Amino acid sequence: MKALAYRGPGLLELEERPRPHAGKGEVVLHVDACSVCGTDLRIAAGAHRAYADASGRIPGHEIAGTVVEVGAGVSAAVGDSVFVAPNYGCADCRACRRGQVNLCENLRAVGITEDGAFAEYLLLHRELVAQGNLLVVVGTADPGVVALAEPLACVLRGSRACHIAEGDVVLVYGAGPIGLLHVTLAKLAGASAVVVCEPNPERRRRAVEWGAASAHDADHDELQAALEDSGAHSGADAVIVAAPAPDAQRQALELTAARGRVNLFAGLPRGGPGVELDTNLIHYKELVVTGTTASTNESCRAALELIVDGRVDIASLIDVRLDLASAQEAFELAGSGRVLKVVIEP
Ligand SMILES: [Zn+2]
Ligand SMILES: [Zn+2]
Image (cartoon, rainbow, N blue to C red):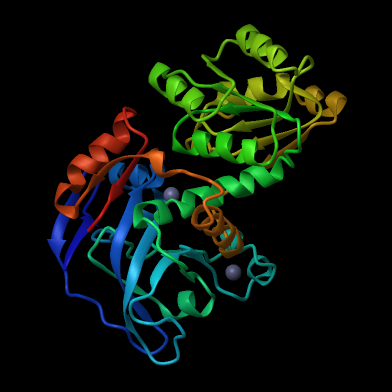
């Protein structure tokens, strides 16, 4: 089978690999769609710590496929359309026992710590299948959109942490695919207006198309005025920072209303200088500042339902669909900032 392997910084090579077969408890999928994520771009650039010594590993963790082989003891059937929740843990640590698999000390993740889905076929290990990470898609759905249940699951966790309620005014930093998914979920949760902060003018335009009340560059006074125009005279009820920007984290605390919730959704590049925050803003405004990272089975299941039920329509997030042979181009486009989601369809 054809597979895209990481061979060092800047080197993703299309290689011929033996097609996997399912042993006891295992499943083999034909990969129908796998979308390219910021994490994949970091892997390709050689900046992901899980890939430090993983020469030859196949990335790809936003996965939709069709079951082609099942090992003994598996309930899925050949022909099932499925989505894969990529994160699974040791099943034994404190986090795993609480269902917080994303925080497992020995986290395993498809496409991160083991071969992923930028390939024609994908072997799902026994532990992953046993932990319920293989979710069957009921009905017909576009595999490219099904694959987006993974980023949506991550976004769902960040959005829930903000407890967005009917009539809230929400501020979102970043209008890449993640920021736009935050806009969508904030509106679904009843936000009366979502104001977006984004430096890229084309992405600002997309944000308004996606339902943002308005979109602005990072100027503090302009954002404050936009929040006031939306009825939030003393700041936003919830602020989500979906951009790896220290200044946005700082500004978020300033533009949050008393009792507001802040979600630091995006991590900052490792080894940076750190961020100096005015913690008095947290104290005197009684802010709740949260962080969320990655997805769990539960959030993947909920995200998949939102997509399959049609409660969120995120198909227009996909700007480009390419096959594996064009993976190089897919990665270049995904990293260019000119398009939103790029999906590889092996
Ligand atoms: Zn991802
Ligand atoms: Zn664990």
